[in-house]
Length: 427
Image 1 (cartoon, rainbow, N blue to C red):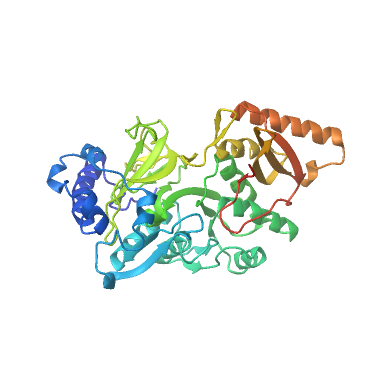
Image 2 (image 1 turned 45 degrees about the horizontal axis):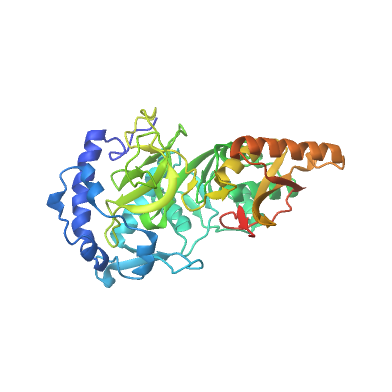
């Protein structure tokens, strides 16, 4: 393995010492903002004796960001700002994240660290297939790749035929792509009569939407690459908060920049390592807009044991869902990732699916529309019925209710260029 970056090679004691120092500094810096000046009025840095004392600090939520949009969390004068990213505000009031030049440099360094960890090097050609603009994913990975010295292609989202031409013409080796779009792109390769494995591709960086291990392995098999999971959110800069190492066994949180907690979403108290809870983050290296105990609503767990790569930074498991995307149907709690896990493990299933929730009389029902690969979508109704029954049975074993399964032709469900829409509520 390559020599670790100095801040990757910290031992636990060193990491925690650094976190305590940076947390105290963050606490004092945050109080320069209008929001935290009130929220933390009675809390001082000298009150923090250990990292456990963070449990005495109140939480920050997305509603707080919305309520104090646009400048309520700002800790520097506006002339120090060089960038903002923001949510669209289509489902509520928007939120904004503000950056100084130092913030962007810190973010680029973290992204470069992520890429280097999985084997990206200066000689690689990097194609970024995610959106630019107010969305953080595109620019975050772009700056990291440039910081490493890669030839960087800002392809953006969509226009699949052009994406494939760029991959071919410039002998691209590394791609940043949303998992659902990676599966869709495979169907375009097929339509063009091209074999993805004949290209120069070797590394995929996937994230921006929850996905299962089965989806990752399918992407790896189609393209002949290693696909690495990543985690980030705009409130914490964007991507680069946590990233897999070459062992693909959990994502290392860069704890010199972020203090992570995993809490029971109901009691808001810490859960034991290995137990699933809500991920809560505090920034430790943010200048313009530090956030303290930000509730992400994302569900995961800390993985136990040491990683074979030698890094002591804690690992989180892949995101299993969000506290607010849980479906309650007939008294059963269901996460969309449970459905994906089953579907993506079945060889007959294509690259896309859709969960529809609807009313039948007074009862809530679930319908799962499943694309079937062409070679399995036969006119023999008996075989299709048997496959339909098989999928429904497998789903029932996982989610404890029997959904209505509807088989549809390959590549017939609606596609999106951004994050996949997996659930539609028609109730």
